[in-house]
Image (cartoon, rainbow, N blue to C red):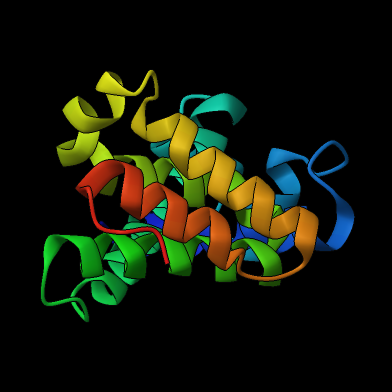
Length: 158
């Protein structure tokens, strides 16, 4: 990704945080990035393209963080437990990043899709459920995670 594109995305994220998404103009973003408005439009056809790129960048970053958390597990069940624990912990800490987190977790849960489908779930539903449970309780919801791991792997529920 080009340096200019990253600067524009960083500026957009900053503007959205400072003055709100609805009140931020493409001119505000261009000014904050130190580029012309035309440059913003060359990089992103419209506001929808810019916000989609911001979401994709956030999801990619979250995927990397979750993948690193999963690597701590030495078995598939331990990796799943680590992934769901990381989703829950981050959901409690930063609820506003929920969409990117659920998208990233869904990608990482895709290999479990057949096991989930057999239980009437999808990877996105499980990721959203764990994130919502953690957000509602303000912390990692160990019972939900243990039950999900047990249901998907056949490991005893502890």
